Image (cartoon, rainbow, N blue to C red; front, side, top):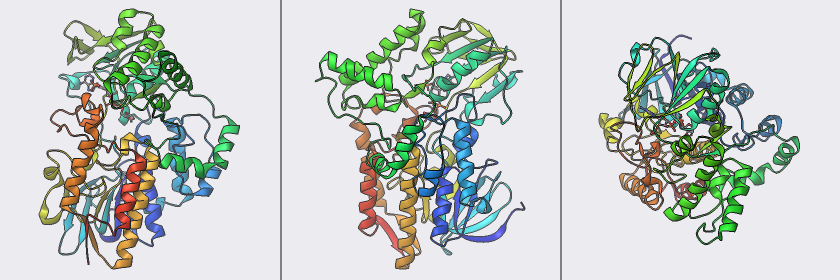
Amino acid sequence: TASETGASFDAVVIGAGFSGMYMLHRLRGLGLTARVYEAGDGVGGTWYWNRYPGARCDVESVEYCYSFSEELRQEWDWTERYPSQPEILRYAEHVADRFELRRDLRFRTRVTRAAYDEAASRWRVETDRGDRVTARFLITAVGCLSDARVPGIPGAGSFRGESFHTGRWPHEEVDFTGKRVAVIGTGSSGIQIIPVIAERAAQVTVFQRTPNFTIPAWNRPLQPEYARWVKENYAEIRSTMRDSLFGIAASFNTGSALEASEQERLAELEARWAHGGPGFLGAFGDTAVDPRANELVAEFVRDKIRRTVADPRVAELLSPRDHPIGTKRPCFDTDYYATFNRPNVRLVDVRATPIEEITQTGLRTAGAAYEVDTIVYATGYDALTGALLAIDVTGAGGASLRAKWAAGPRTYLGLMTAGFPNLFTITGPGSPSVLSNMFVSIEQHVDWIAGCLRHLAETGAAVIEAGPGAEDAWTRHVGDVAAQTLFPLADSWYLGANVPGKPRVFLPYPGGVGAYRVICDEVAAKGYEGFVLSP
Ligand code: NA7
């Protein structure tokens, strides 16, 4: 399609993942015109890009989906307990077709610049394909884990083999058969891809900087009776999820790990381990806040590692001791620890022997050289702010968002930032986002924004903006809640610790999706308290 110059819309939405698609649907429902720009060549966002073998969601399929349409939820059938990337992508495509979204989407188009024109009260938006359009509202739906990070290891450019980042995986199948493969990184992506590559490759060398806690997912075909039961009880299940901490249906106990007897504690943990998935962390209420309670759960997992991994030295290397369990993004796996019993898999501790250089033929650490054919970077993302700040956004008076957020993002409710009128950030920093089932957070944000736009129309207000006082208070509140937990004890991407130079600020709101929703609803009910509305 040709680039557009001079077109004007009620709203421009950036991103056609699950946020952007639902936002478009709601904008249409309000009778507003919208253009959605998407860098990828299709819908799905994160699930468009993360095509690596083994890519799968950690949230159960019947919960990891939209709830806004009764027809959609009744007609779509998931096949596995946890949805694989191809299945999630098919779902995204189905949604795009079913709600006829494509006519307002522009693919292979990256928004490069957005400037607020105060005189006109409009956003001027530019893309890398030469579009120059304006809109009253600018809504970012850019994802929280979409700005892939390849670390700058010296010599990386000289490598003669193939290399891939998990979040920028090629559309063509990558054949690992008989290959010697290096995997750098042992977060969720590394933990998912390593067992799959190990089944095909001649040799897999895992370069681990920090071991992570991972819980078995126990993925399996979705039981038809269960799927039917979920469909019949959808409203109730969804309402439980909305009121919960993390937006999932699993029950989170409030009891204390310290007060339980050893027998009670082990029984609870064994039961949750046998069930698998994120509910494991819900065994006790104090593991997120009390280091001694946390250590009991952490040690339970380390014991599982020792029982699974044959070589005690490897088991110890895989056992996290630098951070409390749950303070880095917990991982959920299929055969991760057992994979290290395979003769073709070896583990390199890059904390003891850092990667010094990538050569034409492999990697060199302080102690050894590793010849490989393929390097897989499972090295993560510039989370929550990376994709937003990749766009040159300027607000009132030409002030830049990058400058405003130089010491860390400042938002009111994670939805708006002062000085940037009519700019909404779906699942932005300061909202629960990555600490939740994204679908629950996405729907809540989009519904809130839609309600806000309706309020503006009804009251004749043209412009809404976060008030600086409310923003200060919210930004402080996010930090205060985080400080009551063990989260600050880990060098995690929740704190920006994975990106050199990124300020150490807790990025998502850790108070739970249920509590957060109540706050957002109250703010709206009080006439958008803390926001400034003007005609
Ligand atoms: P993560 O969770 O950020 O994991 C990245 C991994 O890569 C992690 O183990 C890092 O170690 C490691 N890493 C990063 N840079 C390097 C260098 N330079 N050398 C060695 N190791 C490195 O990203 P994922 O893609 O796995 O998961 C992202 C989210 O997607 C996930 O949480 C789910 O929400 C879905 P570190 O821990 O920083 O020492």
